[in-house]
Image 1 (tube, rainbow, N blue to C red):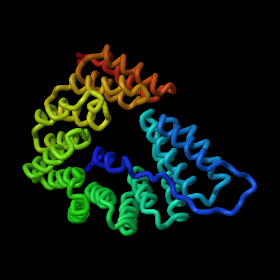
Image 2 (image 1 turned 30 degrees about the vertical axis):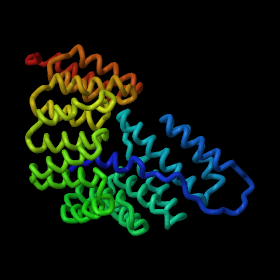
Image 3 (image 1 turned 180 degrees about the vertical axis):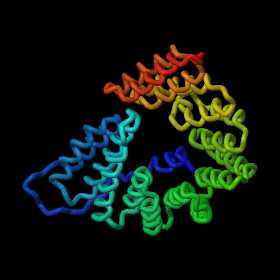
Image 4 (image 1 turned 90 degrees about the vertical axis):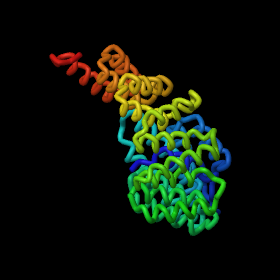
Length: 335
């Protein structure tokens, strides 16, 4: 079970602006607010390596600072995302980020936001039991938080613990009756249970509640595709604004629906457009290239090799795509 788009939207605001506790005077002193501001700027500009250098220095001189540990973790998670886009294994940095969040929670155990963020990091590292424990702790610390129940419900849903997911999502809906996100998550739950008519109605209701939120439309598209209506899913996704459609979740869902309809070239074009809009994403270029090959368009597949090589200069992903292209050229049955 994948709830990637809903999870991404649910965690978008899960980071804390910072939490700290007093530390004894030390020989080395830094301007903590200025350092934190610099890290935030680097993260906002998508420069995790620079953010990590400042965060590491801040942690050296403020080892008891939960804020410093949290900033390290956030930089590591962004760096892991960049690793994944370049075809590198993101797990090492995700696990490091999880360790930093655990340290931050140990230093500031009453900060619900830190427990929530540790849960998100655990989710990203594939440690679902730990993620659930962290979300439960965050929910206990902040009884009014819808987000913690939503994240908890999605975590249970990915594990196919449907009854636990239902309870958590009902709690989330009760705490924020005007929020569309618990409704959309409930749609995903109903789809997993095979209740597609109810799932579609819930997903459409969520979109109606917040028509400008692209994540809700993507989830509606997914529910429609799961119900056997990929054409309707494509209509929903193509109605998104171009900048919304050129997000990974929307592109992935659009391509899956097109593939269901055996429109392979159109699926390749969707990934190709995303790769051109995200030149650092070698995986997107590779996915486009594989689909162009499947559609019999070697010229565009070769162009994707170049796109992948720009995104990942060391060439591992590009080389693999080139290998597939070469094998197709040698095959007597190749179109």
